[in-house]
Length: 299
Image (cartoon, rainbow, N blue to C red; front, side, top):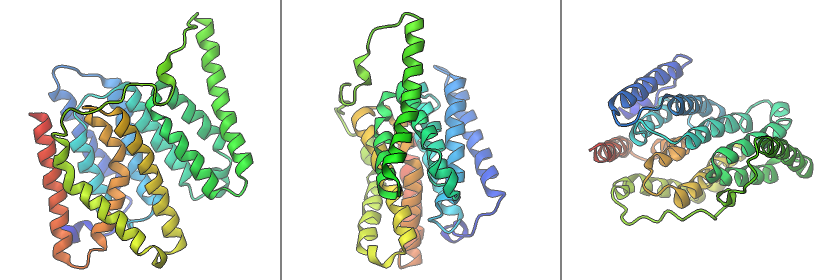
């Protein structure tokens, strides 16, 4: 199976995977008799679908089927058919941000920071727990931009435009009270009483840690472009992980935030394993681990 998924994907691959994703979303929402909310599901589906196009933009996996397959099963395992509207917007906004920041058009990427700031501000207003994404973008500008001050100003200008528009609208409708949950770390820390069923995912967590250690072990052997792109994925993962640690609680659909970077990191780890049997066993461990996690949550 690993050899089959290691083949190069073509232009027809992404629509096929998106079609399969649509069937997953449709079946899960139809099976959820307690609560069916179409609008958040559509937004989430759109954001996750955009993720398929990001694999080619980031280009760390030799355009193979493996990351697309892993991304699909991650989504199928973590999405339960119901999702918060703010979190749904976060998936969509994160995908749009990554499409902009990973664009091959330098002019587009460098001239879009006002738009990026506006997207960050809007996402923060509908989902305050997304504030780590703003920190990620700031670090990205500092680490990659030749005109840091100008681009930070553009980012801030986009944020100010949305914030002023929001406060103006709230003032017109006479909503003048301040919600303190918009302050980072003000909300209640969602400590877990039990790590069941999260510990079922421990094999995948160990694979991610192994991939991280292997990356730094062979850091100097990688090309500058590969190092940059991998660091980009790691910093993005860290931003999403902060949101998960502080705000997830038992809302396991937050794990969808790590579906894209985990697919990239694990697929690269599997590709560089020294023996074929290790690659095959590793792939099936991921499949069975996610299947067990899904069954436990569904039951």
